[in-house]
Image 1 (cartoon, rainbow over the protein chains, first blue to last red):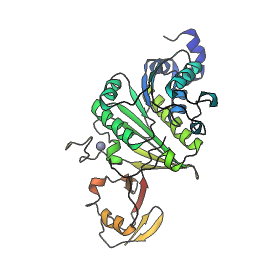
Image 2: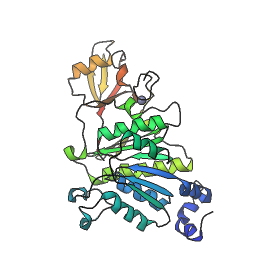
Image 3: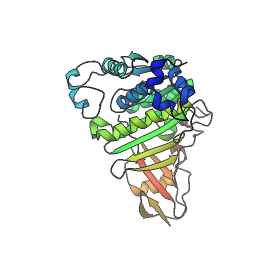
Image 4: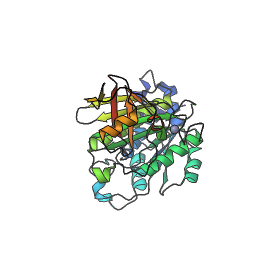
Amino acid sequence: MLTESEILRYSRHLLLEDVGEIGQQKLKNAKVLIIGMGGLGSPAAMYLAAAGVGTLVIADFDQLEVSNLQRQIGYQTADTGSDKVKLMKQRLNSINPEIIVRCINRKMDAEQLSLELMMVNLVLDCTDNMHSRHLINAACVQAKASLIVGAAMRFEGQLIFFDHNQSDAACYHCLFPKSEEQVLNCSNSGVIGPVVGTIGTMQALEAIKYILGLPSGIKNRLKLFDGKTLDWQTFTVTKDPNCSVCGQKK
Amino acid sequence: MNVIVNGNIFEIAPNSRIEGLLKSLDKPLNGSALAVNGEIISRTKWAEYRLCEGDNISLFQAIAGG
Ligand SMILES: [Zn+2]
């Protein structure tokens, strides 16, 4: 049952056939882990908090730097030097005091990650490096946790959903095998704020749809976003039976 | 035969495999993924996968940033 204040707050959801009171209750009951509170994590967390996702677990171990503010729109200049998760928890609770926000203020190893995965319905990978992405992917495959991956750099974005609940789910390693090769991230290549914001916003949209039980357009489908032309390209990813992370032959 | 690589027509020997195409492209493959006609071909299949005339190939890099 929604309270009177919730009915008022979520009235624009309640008007939607795809949400309604039942959907809003699903959002309220949902627990989502968002890893990385940067340019992807800021809008993702803020939209999910506003939408009334009942429990948000936010993870990051960085302090806010002035160079973050060009794209990480959840933060204020006066807050530089403070822990991002603490700042974001305040921000999320001021957007929506009806929800619970829990902070993880340290780098998670595989063991802690797998414990955290047991307590949530869904994971958003909003990290900024390949090492974390592969660590999160492997833990989600093992825990059969649903994972929405976003990434952005320069004017480009990437978005994909791996529903590890399902046996046909591909994984991040099927798509981008782990390697020691140098890959591009925001600090070595730069990024335009609205591009990373677009991808983080899409992660929130897909999270809401997943919680509501609506079909996803990015399940095993990689979306590439071109911020210059505003074109989206779609590629199908099939589970690689030889994948060392999710395949049978691991 | 001709294939399309990231929008550009590219001539390769008939029956070429993905690995052969990549060698002749001489491009860095740092954390790259490759799709043929909209389907990602996993790296473990690059050595055996044969390309066909007119195949539309997309080659792009993983992005880690966020
Ligand atoms: Zn895999």
